[in-house]
Every structure is written in structure tokens, then in C-alpha cells.
Length: 246
Image (cartoon, rainbow, N blue to C red; front, side, top):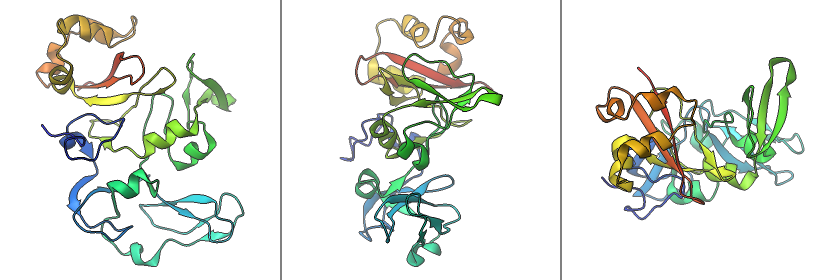
């Protein structure tokens, strides 16, 4: 099964087959650079078109779903959504434009949602009861015990320049060695990619000792009755996983 690297458009954080990528539109005309026959990705709900403020030059995100105008996050001046794009059925960004930061794909992570606002701030949107040794924990709503993780913006922007993937629930990107991990795909794709000598030991190592998934065994995911999403650390090679349970 082809990956984006096989197509000549590699994403450091997405090593799964292309059919797992949500929003991948195949070869099409990019709405941003107007070039045809480009590998394109749809900017949809929660995603953003990134434009500089005409007054101060600060980059801002404009909503790709309702395509409305926004005040500049720096000077407050109005940034108008390009009229030429407002009526387009799909807002497609090609690989080059996405990687250049002209679009931002919002991602769910274990530390909360990351969109363009969080990438600029360097703090995730947060989750309740967050505890982690990887990053500084930032209180967002103390009354609700809601906290985010302070993560270098360069890592958050890398996530936003990466396709999401199909899942029953929202994806929950994992981190290791203080950076986002690379998504390998489902259980079968991970097996084909990594070919571990002992699949059961590999499966057990994907989860924390207290995770009940360790007792289930990988057969549930091998049969396809539930979905497992496997990640690999680009620094140390460790693998982790999240899952959806029917």
C-alpha cells in the first residue's frame, strides 16, 4: 500500500498508507497557488487558511469552514477572507502550500486540541486533569482542573502541516521524547511496516502498565472489530498506541 513518501510527498509525522489520511483529495488543482495536478488536501471544519495581516504582516488563521473575516491577532485590523475562495466547494491546499504553512490542519492530541491559535501560543488547548513529565503544564481553567501543555511551536506547526487520519472518534496524536510521534497506521499496517519478532510483546509494550488494553490481546484489532492507531517516536524508536472500542 502506497505511502505519501512513495508518492514523493513525505510527511515526517505520517508514515501510514495514503488511504488512511483524512482530507486527502488526490491530484487536483490547488486553490491557493492555482497549480493543477498537485497532490491536494482539503481544509475543512476546524482547519484554517493562514494569511498575513495587510496592516502589520502578522500571520493569522482564517476559518476554512465558514470562510469569514477575522481581526488580526496582533494589531486588531480586519483580515478579509479571499473573495476568490469564498464560493469554492472545496478549499484544497497542495502538498507544497500545506508544508509551506499556508494552511493549518487542526489535530487532536493527548494534551488537547492543537489549531493555529495554539501553535502560535505554544500551548495546547488542554484536557482535564493533565499530568505529564514531558512538558510544562499550564493551567487554563483551574476551576475545572483543565490544563494544557507548553510545547515548542515548531513541533505544533509540524502537526498542523500533517494530514489527519480516519478514526471512529477524533484522532489523539501521541508524544514521546518531547515531540510528536509519527503515525504508522492501524495494527496490520504497523505489523507490515515493523515486522516485530514477537507481536504479543510488541502489543503489550504499546500501552502503559495500568492500561486495560494490555489484557485484551492484539487479536481484537487484528480481526478489525476495533481500531488501533500506532505511533513511533522519531527520536528513540519507541511505539505507543491509542484505540477506539466498539
